[in-house]
Image 1 (tube, rainbow, N blue to C red):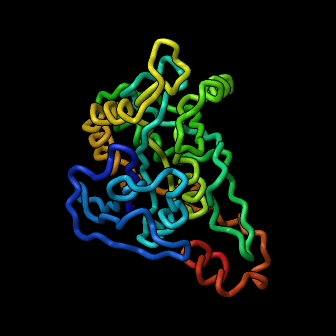
Image 2: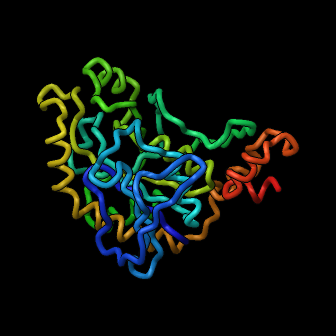
Length: 285
């Protein structure tokens, strides 16, 4: 199984990756955040992408999520392991902890998050947005590495790039969410439409701004905790890759589009049919 890695704040490269090539792709949705670094880790084929671009030049809103995920599809990726910084919304999730959320709440407003539209309509099931088997492989790797980790939970995705107000932070806590971030929900939605398994490792860096005895979150604080936890995050990803690569892909992710498309194939514009062929070609000919 070909594995994709998306690295976020503080995780811009993949330790142990034997680089074979860098590939800049063009997609019907534009260019991805950066060239894909393609190589092998312990004999497993891996494509790594820096979510925010090299040098961290893209805000969460500016990231071309559609191009990023479509590019992985063009590379034959079957599972994506994501890593990103998050704030903790619960006292028991401390900075440097790892969280493997299994639910999302989407509070973004300005982003493209579907490949459909412009003449073709599709509705994928998203009740369970994370691939359970892929998340389990990642959490088992974290457990084996001795990380302080939490399985399950809800990730609320905000627009950013500003951090939350105190009123917002306390509102989200009243909803029972576990962590807060700015990037993962679009990746999960698009991966599902692309029939790619997706799971995320959330690296806790702060308590947002709700914790009365802690300072409000700052970039300096976020990067400090990410540097402190970088070695553990790299180890977990490296140990998770062979676990994910070895699994049988018998999850619903692999056939998410089978019954999702509503548009009569005779009415799908030829241009859209061609553009989306890597996604829908096996269902609409």
